[in-house]
Picture 1: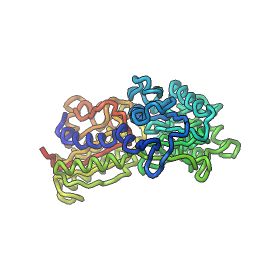
Picture 2: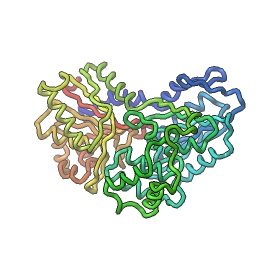
Picture 3: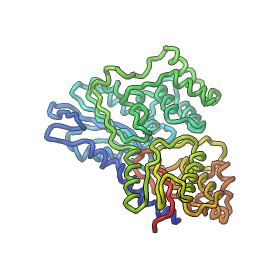
Picture 4: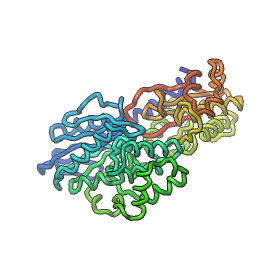
Length: 449
C-alpha cells in the first residue's frame, strides 16, 4: 500500500462506518411497546396487522437484519433482493427471503425475484397491513421488472446504452421508471391500501426520494416524454431496442398510464425515511480528518460531471494548497461527495473513481507536485466492473506504472485506468461493503505520518 493510501485509509473507513446499513436502520426506527416510531410518526402494531418486508439494493441484507432484530416474530414474511456478493448467501433473515440479482444491468434472477415481490404486494393487502420497504443503491437494477411487451434483453440493452453513453442518474432513472413495473411510485400503488414505511439508504446527491432506487415509493416528477428527450439528448436513438422506443413514445402520446405523480392520494399512507446518505459519509470523513490533525474543509456534496475532468480539478486544488494559494493551509484535507460519470471511449477496464484518480495522477506529475494526494472510492466497494473500490494517487503514481510497463496516458485514453493503477500499486480494495451512498473523494496535502 502506498503512503497516500495509508494516510487516507482511516478517513474513508470512518466514512464507511458512518453509513453502515444495519446501524443506520436501527437508528431510524424504534419500538416502544406496540408503537413503531420513525421520526415523528408512530405506527400501531397491536391491530392484528400483517407486517411484510420487501425491497432491493446493495444494503438490503443488513437492513433486513436490523428490522428482523427489532420486530422479531411480528414479521409475517417478505423478500428483498441484493447484488451478488452482498449477503444473498444468508438465504433468509428470519421470515424474510434474501435473493440476488444483477447489477448494474438487470438479470433474469432479479426480474424473477421482483415478480415475486409484485405478487406479494398484490396479495390482498388490507388497510391495517404494514409493508416495510428497504431501499438502497442498486435498487433500480435489482428491482427491474420489465413492463409487458419489453423483454429483459430490451431493458438491459437500453440501460447499457444509457450507462455507456454517459447518462446521469436522473436520465437513467427517467428511463427505468417508465420501462419497469415497480419503480416511479408504482410499488406504493401496488401496496395500497396498506400502510407503507420505506427506509432508504441514499446513493444520490441531495437524497431526492424519486431518484433513489428509481423511487418505488415516491411520487415521480418525470414523464415518458422526459425519457424520450433523454434518448435524443444522448444521441441514442439507434441504440434503443424497437420495443423500448415504441413503449416510451406511446406513453409520451398518452396511450399508456403515467407513473403516480406528486399529489396522488396513494402516497397519503406512505412514510419515506432516509436513514443515511452521502452527506453522512462526507461529514464523518471530515470529522475523522480533523481528529487526525488535518486542516479540513468539506469542498462539495455534489461532485459530478466527467470523471477525468474532475480528476484534473482535484489535483489542481491540491497543487494550489501545496503552493500556499489554496483554500486551506497544509496539512490539509478537502472532502468531496457525489458521483461522476464516464463517457466510454476505449475498450479498457476501470470505473469512474479510478478514471478520476488516474487523471489526477497525470496532472500531479505534469505539475511536478510531490506533496498532494488524491483519493477516490466507491462506498459500495466496487468501482465499475472491477474488484477495486477506487484508488489513492500522488505525483509518483504514473512513474510507478511506467516502471511496471504500463503507459498511464494511453491507459486513460483507453478507459483502462484499472490496469495502470494496479501496476502502480495505487488501487484500494475493500471487498463488498454491503452499503452504497455514492462516492467519496479526498485531496490530502502534506501527509501526517
